[in-house]
Length: 215
Image (cartoon, rainbow, N blue to C red; front, side):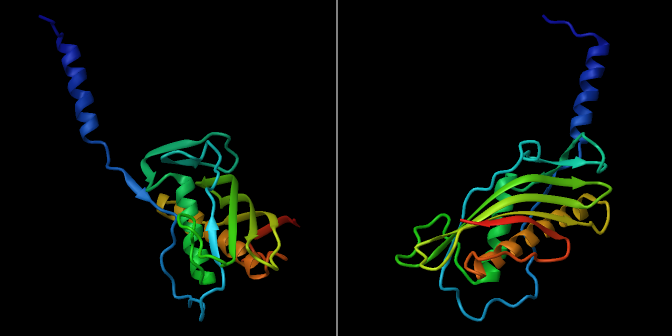
């Protein structure tokens, strides 16, 4: 028979007690809440297809990765604060929510596009996705809109930097800042589709276009 010492039994009991009192995980999403902005009066004459979003590995974790200070090189995993879906899917869903509402277009990323209907394909490569405790949320992404079965559209490639100051320092407020950054990125991408790929217009003063090229 295996013998246990009093010390080992106490240690095991303490471990079980610690596990049982761990705070429950909270889950967060980047999908925006519905707002009062009106939808387009008429459906768009095109559809959109949003490709899988690429995200830096250090941010692509189930738990929220917090940079406590803007000057830090370290990231703190917040195990009790998690994304409700993998981060690339969260960003993709948030982009879809804004683009379909702003443009009045169906997202056919999981469906066969309607025969003969023009499609705008959207690709997004996120270079930085920073949630920072003492500074603005930062979203740095390169993106492309490309027409498929479209007679007049052009392919446009741009890099966009978005920074949003949080309203406070709680995790919920920090996530809301990054949620707003994704929304501003989507609004900027929408402007490129509206122009048939001719140009992109920053959605707000805190959105910087670092350069665009056609083709």
